[in-house]
Length: 196
View 1: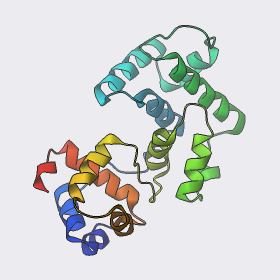
View 2: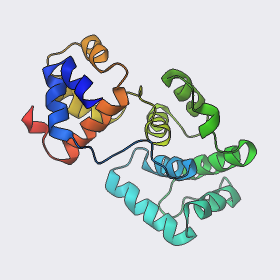
View 3: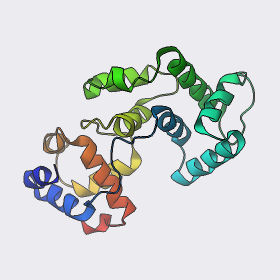
View 4: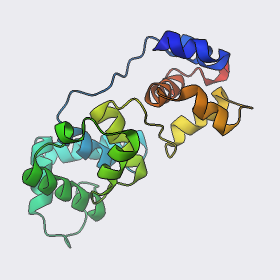
């Protein structure tokens, strides 16, 4: 995959050179519920804030499964707690009920196209496009996910592909959108964005 991307354009070759080997691998093998809860917690907050909230939740409830059980048992109109908003707690509860009723959807959704997978995920309460992209990338390892709503990916991509038209970028990364997105995060994590 890296060799194929490198052969498509010099910008992609530079991206691969600066980011490989990658540290993030997909799909993440943890249970999908773990990834769903972490995705919900991470919505619209910094990475540091998400880590802090998850730490509080885990301290209060012992495990991801304990967090889901707590969210499902908590009345909807209860105030926020553990630094988790009411709407996020409801989303966690909704996910818990969804899995309790239909089981883990990994197998059911495994063969879907990128658009079909995103469409299924956004049907769930509390999962907008960004959350759907994160779950599709890390929970399913779908190769065709371009998280256009992720500020980090867009910041890196704007620098990496500076001067290229969006249609050109879309053509260059087609079929490997997820891999390129992970490379964009890696550019930021490694502090090498200035190399472009």
